[in-house]
Length: 434
Ligand SMILES: [Zn+2]
Image 1 (cartoon, rainbow, N blue to C red):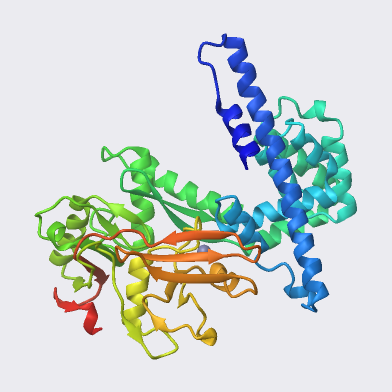
Image 2 (spheres, protein in one colour; image 1 turned 180 degrees about the vertical axis):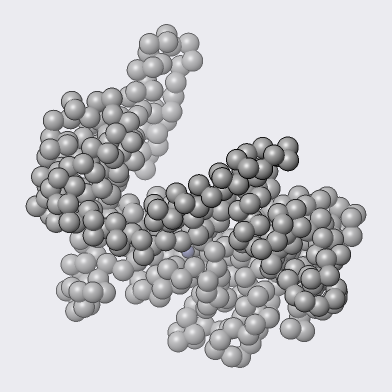
């Protein structure tokens, strides 16, 4: 540990009085070290996967169930999300077992980790023999890689893959269509990125339709504004200016709601928004006859603002308790995951004596909920001295990771805004009674 610390110290020490060419050489040297470290991580991840699989084979675990959870362990060790952990592990196994030249180029710092990932991705549809051929053709002579950016590396790998096996590339395109989807993630300044992953013909036609609308519209809005407004209008069926959210859950303090505080509110599934934006959403919903705003007071610990316990004897989490856990945790509780919550389940499994309570309840994404049930994983929940909900994840190697529920506003109020054909109604109820 001491040796490692010395190494990090040396890596980060820079004399600002060095001459300029020495500073540039230092930047280049550190970049080579990052690439070599990525190659080392790939070897370690592939070795971990092989060791776990052979240990599981030795105790009779069926082949299809071996290696489950290894990608999540890699993710935690790298402080990355489980879906990235999956990509890191697939990348590591491809490099170590099938693509030695790409691995060597990464180790030498000729390729960055991302460019090596692009080559692995473009060759993923090939069989092992073709993949080895692509690896040798593109990376055996690393001089050819000099000066190639991300797009050129990906295009070169794609062209070789297509020449080696055009059917595999076409089949992959057909499979990719099944993965079409729409996702949302926060953007700076109370904006959001709404992303659609579409087959190319559909994506191009959506974009062309929005551009056409911008071409014929001359009301002073910019082209970009017209395209964004048109997208909202056509998807929600209402004008962009008047589009009240169809269903939004806001958590904010009573002070913010009544205008006495500027503490930010939280949109569930999005994150913090300024008080003025939250109050604007609520007043818009209250004055729109097609919307209904409902207030629900949540029971918070007076010291910490953390949401506190409720318990049930049922095996499944009752609705009120499940909603409570969803609001408390906001996103999947596995460290670094950040995926939306899909499951509210027992941290300590029901079958192992875990109770159905706020303390033992955990909001997770689907993948993480299955991974924590894998042999060797353990999750220990507790409230710390400030009543903040904390869970300690232990993986099969004994590595431990802490996960804390995010802080909530004092005396939080949840506001649900939903589109309904009824007059405005506001009800206040207490979550303790739910
Ligand atoms: Zn997760």
